[in-house]
Image (spheres, rainbow, N blue to C red):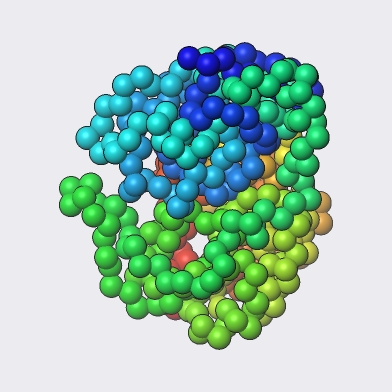
Length: 372
């Protein structure tokens, strides 16, 4: 097996074995603490231009399949694991992880101390890194990492969003017994902004009898309202929310439409900006399926799935905005609502995939608002 290196912009080097395609890649190195769902994580568009480190040591044992894709392709720039599975053992598997990464030209590294890497990122913050398995020398890899532009200030939403409006027709949740997606009847219409959306969001909306029209991130407020929506959904997505001003402008116009609005992750951040709040980059982000969040309106604790490197600041909250959820890890804003209006958002991922289902009720709340 070919040798590989991971070179960080601060000069730290990790040496291991090639995993996936042979070559080199550069991106922001981050980590995810989920124990399962590696395929869903690798195909989440929110990871665009990032190199994902899996903290769980053994990755790949259940293989991959078309059904569990969260987008049409792998989104990450690279993959870091401690011990890739050498045997795939699952009746749903259609390919093994290593071959899948190789076929999709995704460069990875294995057999490094991922615990040491995660501790380094927690202490020093997420940073640019290079994985190289093509013989690139360590000094050149460090220089490549330092020269890369990073995520801050970049609009990646426009890069991953659909270019044309389309109707979601792939159904709702997957029924393992029937080996097919459910096809519920619909009675309400939702327009969903695609800022880099995961497929499971559309499945969750469909499960609740909602007919979903997906529109590009650059869609104007007038174009959204021309679809005569009963509700408006703001999706997750990658990059710096402060760089997506065109979406903020559209959302700001939609606030007074009277149409219920629900946002998650990037959608939460863009809605917050439209309401007058600001965003900032976290030291090493929140990524994993074990993040505790407190619902300040009920006092209940939810274990949530998260994937974001930016957050909403709470130093200048308007009187008409209520902070509804906070992280129990660091106290950052995890949800808000507009007082007296059917508008709310959360920073985490209630659609999970992977992750716990504690926050599934938020889709019910949104569907109920459409039927008042």
